[in-house]
Length: 213
Ligand SMILES: *Cc1c(COP(=O)(O)O)cnc(C)c1O
Image (cartoon, rainbow, N blue to C red; front, top):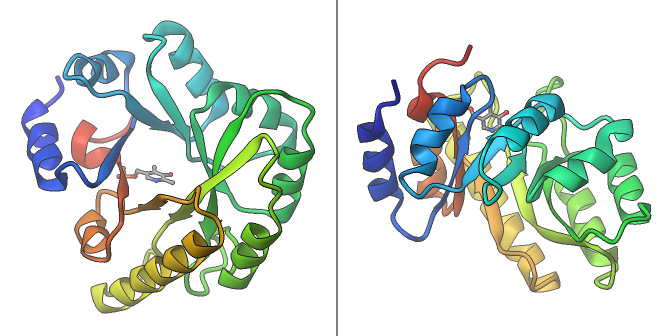
């Protein structure tokens, strides 16, 4: 059973300024529906197949946020199925996206790489600034902001420094492109630190739904 108490407490904690993506990967449709029935509409998934299966079974007005690794051959289907793609983390994928022959308008976030962890993907700050500067505002692709995943083995002081750095970058690119409005930063373990650094969208899975399958 879903514990709605935690959901309601966190909603209150976040207030109206911070958006909440309920990360439903590895969670049942039943749990998703119980949040849906509370009025929640934004859910996050990492795997295309799982997203499509859930999308086919669940209400049409759910906004699905894609958070996972992107393989180029799956991109058309990801575009078609997602409200916002948070995990654009490679130049090649960005280029395929802007050259895609589709009339569907696509909202994306550019994933920022923090620190030096080799396993995490993402762009450097300079790469993000360059993409934003050169982005064709008439394209079907709209850059709405940046997405940040914090490193695993760092202390909260370092984490706070890195999140603050992300916030600075966010302010910088907002001045270049006024469509930019989303700083997607904070997961179950670090969302409070992220909010203290002005994140305006958190992506919470286990803290809301419990352990994943
Ligand atoms: C899985 C995932 C989350 C949610 O993680 P929790 O620790 O369960 O809150 C958030 N963002 C991304 C990119 C994820 O892959």
